Image (cartoon, rainbow over the protein chains, first blue to last red):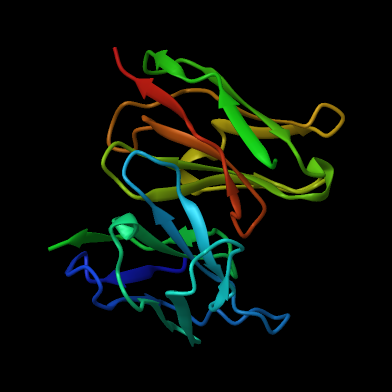
Length: 112
Length: 118
């Protein structure tokens, strides 16, 4: 199975400051169709997860442009340009290139 | 509005069975793979199973193979997860179970809670 490793585990951020989350996969996520199926999910406290970013860098409709995804191969990053209070929660990376579909362990973003 | 609504969770004894349902609305259900993902209390996300549009392909995480069965009815826009031999040990099945659209997990339900305990 593909192991997804996220860092940091916890990320205290000052409001208005940037934040960055890393996600590394144990093998390349480039699919045979040429796409890279790396997704970022946000789970706010007490809520279901919500997809933010798909195929590395594509923002879901309605997701603020302060969220951006980048990376390739096995190294990926989610950046929040200026953290707002509503961004508090746990962020997960997920790969769906290989079966079984696997998730990173999550990064807890909190306000300092 | 695209919506997934799970039901069927509850308290069940170890070794027991439970059937989860997911009612889909607001999109062409028959055109999508569908998945179940679970989250144990205070833990991260774990993909459980998924099923192809016509039900011809089904995949499971190793820990549930032979115990869980995913199925669907495209005419009724329903997805199910039949869970047998439920466990309360180290590979516990106690979790919130989410119904999720597609391989890309783009739409999530609100979840239904399964508690396996004597």
